[in-house]
Amino acid sequence: MADLSTTYMGLKLKNPLIAASSGLTDTLEKVKTLADDGIGAIVLKSLFEEQIQMEIDSLGVNNMFNTYTDAENYVSYYTKEHNVNKYLTLIEESKKAVDIPIIASINCMSAGEWVDFAKKIESAGADAIELNMFILPSDAELSGKEIEAVYFDLIEKITSILKIPIALKISSYFSGMANTLVKLSNSGISSLVMFNRFYNPDIDLETETLTSNRIYSVPEENSNNLRWIGILSGKVNCDISSTTGIENGETALKNILVGAKTVQIASTLYKNSTNYIGTMLRDMDAWMDSKNYASLSEITGKLNASNIKHPIVFERSQFMKYYSDHH
Ligand SMILES: Cc1cc2nc3c(=O)[nH]c(=O)nc-3n(C[C@H](O)[C@H](O)[C@H](O)COP(=O)(O)O)c2cc1C
Image 1 (tube, rainbow, N blue to C red):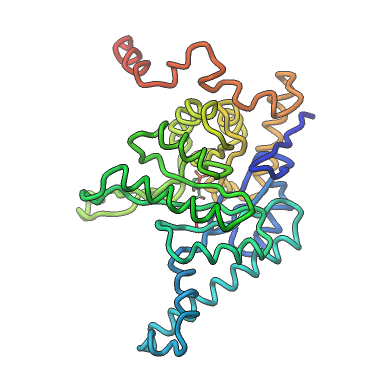
Image 2 (cartoon, rainbow, N blue to C red; image 1 turned 180 degrees about the vertical axis):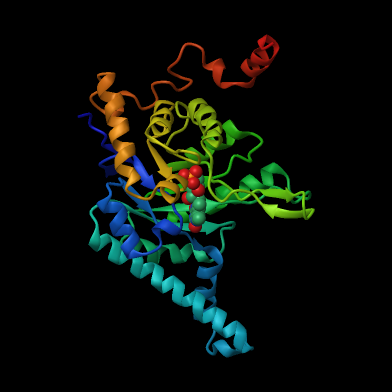
């Protein structure tokens, strides 16, 4: 039996499988089931920046009806405040109920006042916090530098407030990817979560309308992770967690081989149910045994760009070669 335990952001995990933030991690019951099924850690469903901002706004006014004049707004305000409190309760209760790390998650796009509120999440007992940060670079007025500045600004603010480790879940929409991610890894965060997945647009040809693409990922989407984690894991100054398209134990191993400390899974658990965690762990263990690896640390990053002879394989020129040789 290989030792699948690892450390992630300074936390001890019995294995590298993390339940990614999703509808599978939004109640105490689901947290308990995931823990019973053997998951290494859990990222709770994200709280949205706007939900927290609502709570803050409510603290700033004497009479909330001055601000939320019509009944509909008040109801929406109340619901959101209630959600924030419910979230803190979920953290507290999860920490009591299970003995694996519980990572809170916030969906954000600015360094607003809500950042101070993150302290409440820390006080509720979260082992770490994951910031799902995304600014779609669709505003033609904003340069790459200006967009990146928002990320650094937020990290500076939140690292000065919190003691728990901070993970930054990002997209792969950075023009200077390597440069930006290395700088981010030096900004005080403990992990880069690569990469968040978006609902992309599609077209229904029958009705000629815009629709949304698949909710769940397909394994092919993971090759982007292998490339970037492979290129960057030997260069960044923090852990990397891989997410998107990790469907089975084999894909999990590949992501670890290129340097991911942990892998975050959602779609495969939606498709195969949470007891599939056991199958993934058994498959990982069997491969490691067959290769005589005793522990995960022996394979973590073994195939990243810093550790292989021909790191150029990770880069595009190799694809050009492939296409020109492929008849
Ligand atoms: C139904 C659903 C809900 C999700 N909700 C969140 C969320 O609240 N916050 C977040 O950071 N990611 C969310 N995600 C993204 C997942 O955490 C994960 O990063 C993504 O699905 C890629 O992993 P996968 O290929 O294993 O699904 C969600 C994904 C799904 C499928």
